[in-house]
Image 1: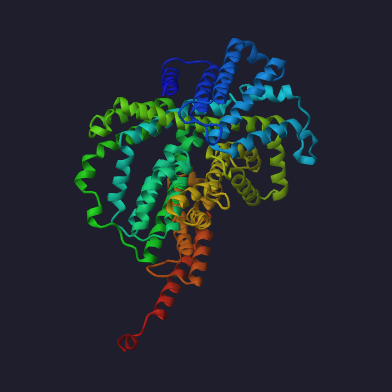
Image 2 (image 1 turned 45 degrees about the vertical axis):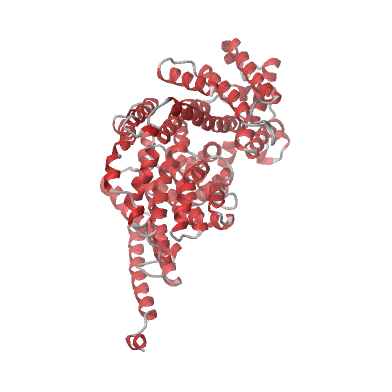
Length: 615
């Protein structure tokens, strides 16, 4: 609690009132996070939960010593690193790298530890590897000097985490503590609870929103899934489907504006694009994704004959309206971000302040209080430790890739393997982004994939923002892609279902997200670019195409079970409609017409005749 309060006071002071040099600001932030992390996260099973072990205190002490070393020799250090790194600098940098990777292991598991050490070893010994995967020799002083400098651990990614991301994690914590999150579920329940399969639609909307704020699919599945998954199971959804819906919605939240999790802030910096521009560009693609999930759960409910919630389970309109003031923070967020176009930090602080203001109109348990402040501080501290450990390791990864020139080599490999054909290059990029992201938090997955893959498709004529959005989608979707579908596995645990079955079902639910990026690469109007009429037309045809594809994958079309011929026609017409172009749109429309005829034909053939029915 003490260190968490120090972090909160420091961050609010620096971000709101007193500006510091970037390296100094990041180094103070990081040392507080490291001290908290080594105390809060135990180093091994069986370690005491009541007090820190000697090893924990040693790590805290070393973290403080590294910070003091940087501060004492701050100006000189910034001039000579990484090209003139001294022996003492080298020792300090090695200790820092070891501490960062150990913190990542404690907070995020062995996967992040392996990732960090793999890139350190590659930087040190990659010169001995053959061909394209090898690199020129670099001294240890150059490598570790890079890691310790402002292009490594203390680089832009940590800067984004310690500024923009911190503000929105604080916003999310206050939002949850003041009851706004519960109201959003209440509102979703009122709007969709009566419809067939209502709880799954509540989960789709509510989990999408929370996933956007948290930026962590797994954390969101665990948080909201404990409520939504049992609710879905109670009305008759199969356990594996309930777990998959929660996983798909929580994962999709990270591509949903206006917040889009931590990755969008990093994208704004990496592409030098205003955050509001990124949020606006993501509106139509995220709509298509959530529309597809929403439609799929509706079709599944129709196939299974599931009903909505009973009237006594639906909140009353009066209750919904009385609490509607809880939407004020979201209105403030959207207005200040997209209309007034304030700075991101100012937007975040105003949204936080609006949450505090509306809390005084809440019932007693949800009013801003000292107890609530304690909870918010602990929630923010826990989330920031995990995120900071990830971005610090990502700093090691990205600085390694930059130092040895892997990004340029990978671009050359992709261009060569694709034969210069864009669709082939996009497919290779998709596969690599998913593989790089498997088992990793979204932020790290996106940063690593963008550093390696963005130059490749940018070289082939795709503009920078579109390339990053393309990669961002697949870095997010790696959380529901078998065999390492971490969000789906979290949903399976809560649902008590087979993990593999949940993973493949979630993959099917998220199918639109695997196709939408190709759509906006070839049809930039889906990123809100071009004439308004063109944007409307392409959005309409894309929506029809997604509808047809959902009908194909779900096996339900026009109020009845779709036979295989109908499903094949639907898939073909869906693919034609989502590809921009008048010819493909006409082919897709013809396919939809054929699907209507086939569905009518099969249903009529299977319907019992009047004389048989009366027999």
